[in-house]
Amino acid sequence: MKWALLLIGSELLKGSHQDANTPVVAKALATRGIHLQCVEIVDDEVEHIRDALDRLAAVAEHLLVSGGLGATNDDRTRDAVAGWLQKALHADPEALEWVRESLRQRDFAWNDEMHRHALMPSSAQRIPNPIGLASGFSAIRESDGVRVSVFPGVTYELEAMLNAFVRNFEPDPRPWQEHSFVLFGIGEQMAERWLLDAELPEELAISLLPQTGPLEIGLSGHLDEAVFQTAVARARAALESHLVCENQSIPEALASTLKARKETLACAESCTGGLLSSLLTDLPGSSQFLLASLVTYSNDAKMALLGVSAQTLSEHGAVSEATVIEMAQGARARCGSDWGIAISGIAGPDGGTPEKPVGTVHLAVSSEAGSATRVLKLPKRGRLQVKRVAAFGAMALLLSTLSKRERSQ
Image 1 (cartoon, rainbow, N blue to C red):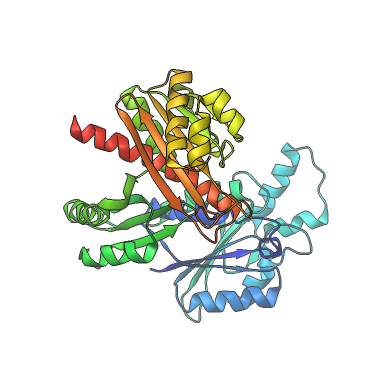
Image 2: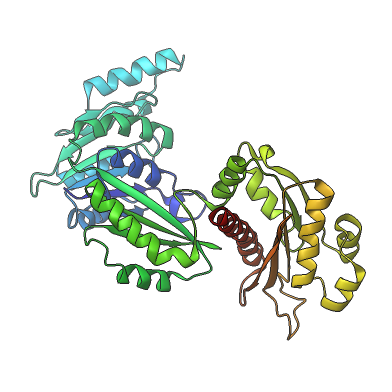
């Protein structure tokens, strides 16, 4: 059976609210091995809702609908779905009693508008809402056998209702398998080409999710364990040259690696302005490995706080391999950490030269055993994009250096 999701709410199309419900629905369905075929968003107009239901009914047998079950004038989902089913609305007795009891418990007075919370098409079955006033409902359209199941748009109500609702469906007997790879420094087209050459199983779903910096690749499907692990191994071999980590984000991978090694880190940031340390301190337990972060934006700060030599800055400039090496070494020495990491670049839109155009970023990591560097060329990127790619590039460089260290030991 194919499933589709319809989200209803004009606010979702105006940019004032973000869709928080699709991930909730997808995760709930995934517990039963069910996956969405497509998702559509429409406004609160009855005609538009019916048209969307027709479009989705052409590609799926079970339509999930979220939103528009309140008691105000712009909550029109009940009317639209009832018309689509060609059924009249009626007040479900259990739903009506739930509304009355909920109002009593909250010490709220009954009014006629509250009656709408209990309305549903005459052929529908009630879906209990353990938290809110509005019950959901589920019904089958007689003309084609397509089922529609309707839920409130309030995310925490939807989640509570779905977790119970999906238990009514038998899970796929084949195990659902998932694995993710995170790459850096490669585009999605090249990564896709490498995966095609790996001759992965046809039933394996491959998703490529480019972000500002990393590229995440997901493998998923209903496959036997042995078949899936063979596919993962083939994909890993194909992506190895740019592979940073698996089944976690780059900051998570760096944090877990440093914790496992019981090693510490100090950051020296220039163009990223503290973004690298912000990404790391977003993680709980970051104090176990991150000792300090120094934002040395000016040359004077680089000299005073990190010990970068005036000669290096004069001969090579702030954005150079020599400077970031000394920044990383200085951060490690001044803070007493096992590792130092440094970033210096030209985020733009001004400040570039023919030799060092906007988007040039130098990275370095340093340890007692030596330093490793990388230069990024990020033309035609906005300032915030350059900062984000630089921060992820620095973490990827340290992870790569740590991996090489482990292999050599």
